[in-house]
Image 1: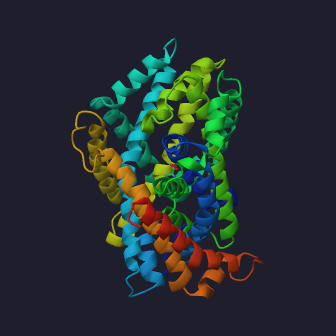
Image 2: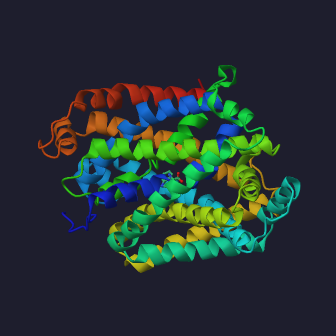
Image 3: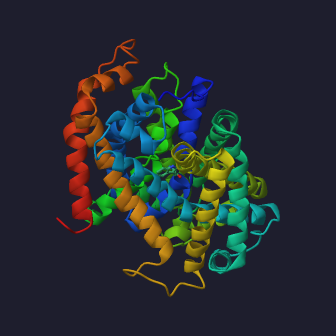
Length: 448
Ligand code: TRP
């Protein structure tokens, strides 16, 4: 069945939307806290290797699947390999974005609270100690986080209901470049923080004694998470690509821009962490207890704080839009629902689970499995289990199941492009990615 699907209007629109999906809280909230908990520089190095050797080939593979099938993830696999069990990947691919949304929207909600604090000048004159206690009180509270989740969800509804072209593309085009400029300012500021040198060293100097299999797995999971990989987002987006979009080049551009943003976030955070005497292992709180201190130190801090939290909220929005779009496109095309109705179901169920996750940080903290609260379980399972499994299956699918000619036609735009990377790409997808992912995955879980 050929759908008359919409496609992105411009080349910039393609990149901005894919970068919009990739750049989000994963770069600015999750990356620094994972680096902090994993001991610094060695994690960064492994992370960069994962982006180059696993991330870029896998993004290209997802683009191939998306544009060759031009349909939602669940159906894409069935369409390209009819009657085979590969169709299961499609269903798996709807599960991960769903689980991610359940805790991602909480962090997005925190961002709005901090925007509100910034606007009302709520950080002024407070010591690092007080700022930290206030954050903990807020994030473990009952109602406030929930209200912000609801507001954030409403914004998602407004954008997604408008459809791909009008909503997503327009929103991404302006925000991404602006966020980038702002990060440059904060990175420069880091050089002027007293005692910040320690932070630079922590972040940039690899200490290999810190590398364990569990940390390798976390670096790979973080790379997949940050690149929006392995779970349908990129398949869904590329199903809207036009025929002239260069898949390999777009994949590399998206991957490196995303990585640049993560590295800049590290340079913004770590000198400050050490300068203000915050523990780098603070976990999910790290960014929220560090940044207000940074803003208060800067000349014109009020403006910087407001701008930063606006852009962070918007970056979160473009990422959740991409996550919601996967699940929504699935419901629309699979269950023949209207866009509004599908979105209603998806938003409603995510909201309920997000509330449960949020409460698990505070009032319901007693509820634990394997020593983790519900929030941590959602995060760990999606990033460190579902994403690696998805990545593995995608590399196998494009490497072995999909016929070589289809892949060739997609990456060369039907033979119109001359490319030199076809053979290396196939090698990575057939041998390197599956083996590396399987080894890291099994040893990281302690099964190997
Ligand atoms: N990459 C986004 C971020 O860094 C989050 C995200 C969007 C995502 N879509 C995804 C993660 C799909 C995994 C899979 O914030």
